[in-house]
Length: 93
Image (tube, rainbow, N blue to C red; front, side, top):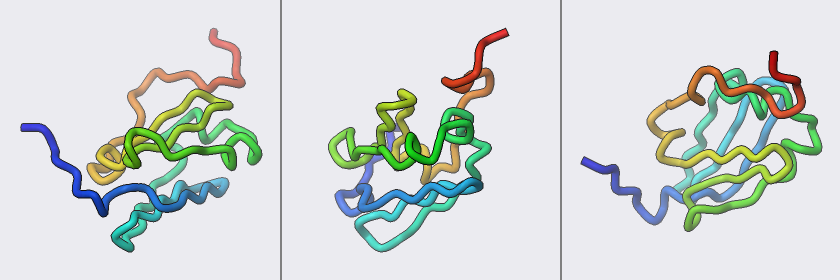
């Protein structure tokens, strides 16, 4: 059964530190997850991390500089990025 997101579960603000990703929702909750879950963000520069946009009808976050997209649905489920995703600024072996 697909998850139905409520209108108040949309993205209000995003904060990225060297260790964590914090997403403030419209309903007042804040989701905080370890940055190691998202290798593209982990290896991005502070400027790349700061350049984000709300997308997906308000339920997603897009980082255009590193081509990373996350959803509030995935964050609320505690879903890390699939393994094997290489960081953008590192060469593949």
